[in-house]
Length: 394
Ligand code: SAH
Image 1 (cartoon, protein in one colour):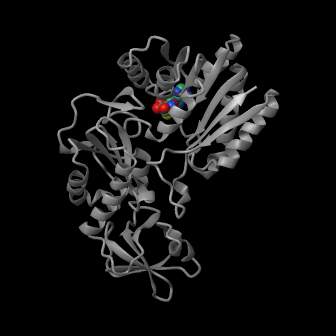
Image 2 (cartoon, rainbow, N blue to C red):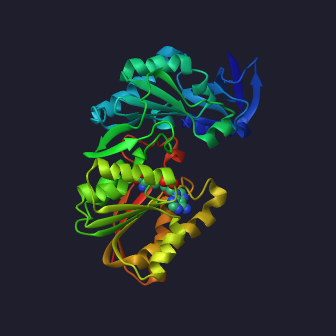
Image 3 (cartoon, protein in one colour):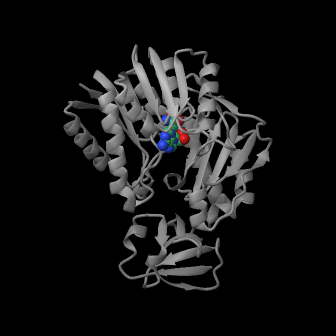
């Protein structure tokens, strides 16, 4: 087996079980090691630290999977990790027939570079590392055995795949993929999900519990759901929350199409969706003097990495400022950030700035993150990305 020797004083994060050995931490590589091979990671003195998978094409030179020197990274290992991850969701009751849930969340489940989402009987496997990509012929049958799905569709996130030097073709790798959208239910609300072409793996599962929490403040309110995608928050507000009427806005034509389909599936007539650019729409609504009792802001990731944080915070400030202006007294603001590089504290400080500029008192009611099927390992805090603040704007 090849060996990767770390630079002196670079071992500490890996002893603490951080799973990404960056190229800058590597002193030398011994043995003939091909991309995708299992390697041992050693201290400068030659002591075993962890075992992982090598990839020269990625700046994450080794992804670590076990810290037990006796444990080979064979099918038994992957099967056990998958069984632990899926077993946890089963205990949470997330494997019920028509529900949707994340079954595997990458590093948090000890499966770096793998995301597995379930939509009723169908699974979507998002492959974000070479380590996972080249083991697909072994992993797919293991997943099929553990979860018993009708199909497994393999996808990758374009940006991540490029960084890892991967080429993953979106295709059905097991069983028969649905020939149209899959119907799921979230808190009893029905959604049609396009597994092959939808954003992410088709649906934003990370916001599941936040949609329900937000809905609980929406009774009889006029709601504006900005960046609504397929209508998650909008429909939760209408169906669960008893909102008076809801306007959902998104710039994606297909998202608005799905949102309209989803409104029909739930038989609601007080929810309207329009295809618009949200920054423009916000300014226009403010100029027209429109008011709402609740505004949801769930924009896409504004900061790709730490170099874009300042710019992202300015964009967050701008949309939150206008959203607050649109709120009637005693309004509800649900404001989210899915930029991992923007810390929770930065996001809170941004909102404090908005309160000061707009001369409104803002009460924080709930500070939320991802749903419990998206755990965060304290060893890899980089995986935490979602902030969702529910506020009362006086
Ligand atoms: N709230 C949604 C998820 C939103 S994801 C849910 O609960 O499912 C972010 C959405 O923002 C995507 O649907 C994307 O199409 C949309 N989007 C990105 N940039 C936009 C812009 N400038 N104006 C409007 N929508 C935008």
